[in-house]
Length: 254
Image (cartoon, rainbow, N blue to C red; front, side, top):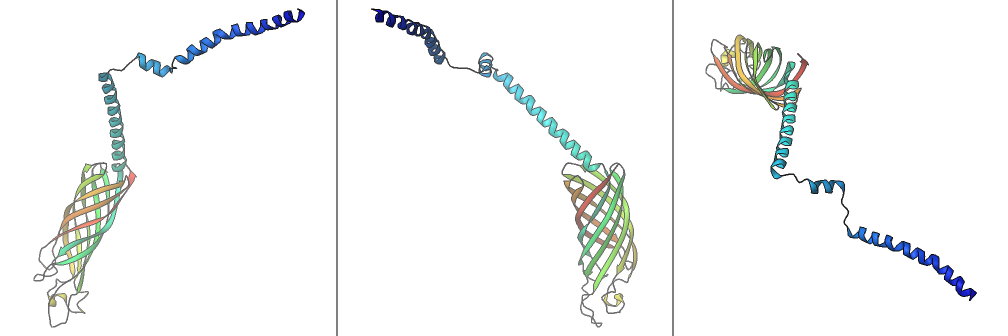
């Protein structure tokens, strides 16, 4: 009987522990049955943005992006064309008549120059060129065939930039100065006039044209310049058409 009472006493703690765990098990079961929601999900579920308001938000965001892009382009343009000096160098091609009765010949040339934009888009340019070619004089008694000829030009004048873009720039120029022609360098010592060439000498000349620049960086660009050049050798007028191409380097802030 003593042992029966002891076993009954031992069962009380076990029974009390079981009664205490029962409510906790029910709470855990109810908690697992309910889905968990984050604060963002609860906010989104409580506040739904209407489609009209959503489109307005997107439109305003796009406007901000476009405004920042426009400001960035304007800054690039200011940085590119705020340079005071442009140095350019390259080569080109022209058609030239070396004598009154001779046919036009093709000449290759080099070209260097510098422009000082002292008055905004208006600048002053100094330009230097050298032209080299071969004249076709035909059969003659002096045995002179295809003599080499050359001309050198030293000109200066205004240059005006009338379009300034992020990638492209356009300008026009008018140059005037002195030209020197060497027409007797390949005639084996004979006077060049004996084979129909102009005599060696100096002449007044001018050139007009336009330049288009493709900007690689704010300080570096590629340039193409079609131009017309007037010369007057041997009391004749030469109307020369050609082009120059090369690179432009901008430096010196105004």
